Image 1 (spheres, rainbow, N blue to C red):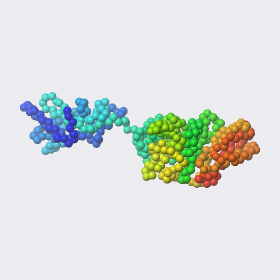
Image 2 (image 1 turned 90 degrees about the vertical axis):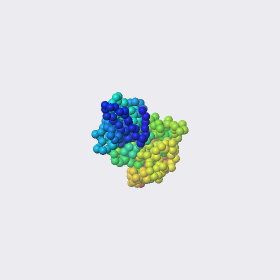
Image 3 (image 1 turned 45 degrees about the horizontal axis):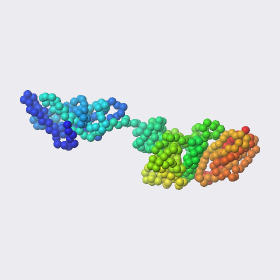
Image 4 (image 1 turned 120 degrees about the horizontal axis):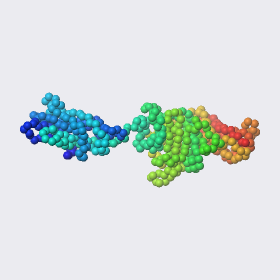
Length: 453
């Protein structure tokens, strides 16, 4: 057997003359697969159908009959059935013709990265020998089945290169978690998700508020989003303590994004869930406090953590990775997890993108929340913190008695978002925080009622 390149000199098949029978003679001039350059073997199926074309030429004055079949080049494997081209396949006076055949072959016979070959025989008298005529680099590709979810993800504009299955989500482009329910129900052409409300509560647990590096990085990230002058979204940080029912939290429907520690992020320090078009932001951000960059072996600095959290919040709000003119300066650019955020704000590209999706309304209402204990013992020392934070804002704290309690205290010495180390005699109180200096018109007031008994 031998391989012959496409366009090689015709292989003439000559046969010895026998007195008792006519001798078939002719040659093959073409062999190719139809509409494909490789054979794709789909996993989960038992057989593969291959369509191929054979071109033959007969010799003047000689009868023509040729039997052909497919096989695997260079290993002697060939397949049933046998296909025949004969005189009746030629038009009157025609010396050459071509014919298509379809072969269905068991997948167990199709070996990865082997070539399909054509075997021929002219059935003259004596034993019938099939020889390899020609083989091409039609590599047999044991490809995975076509995944309809992957096709939908591609139609959303995401790459599926390196995609992985996270259980109830697909991880795409290293750091974006696409919920499988969202992908399954996605209709191509649907616009990217928009978060339907502008006060967004970010709930953090002890894994982050007890970690100074990541806690400070999150404050930096939230401040950056809240300071963006052309965007209407208002982010709020609210601390929780697992299992402690005496810590005030918004109702579950208003706990929008949860930031928690996880060892899941491996190639980047932070992962974020993308919205699912229900009007809410993506509900989880996972950070890995033990992450180390492969290129340096070093852990994440606070500035790098802030960059990654700003980036992750963008995904939670429905922003994919930046592309196009100016994208190289964007904080949403893919592959920038080792970058550092140093309070420089967003790029011009980012500002334009953010304001287009969530345009500013200076009349919009900021709805801050005051976190801390719900009830206290008399003169128990505690602290309170308002959720709305940005560098440059001014805070003024006050406590007043309510429901018959006589009390009025201004904490003039406190100018930050946290009211530290205060206590009260028995009674009912309203804790108030007045916030000024934001991009929104008017004074912002946060209020919380507590019971001391």
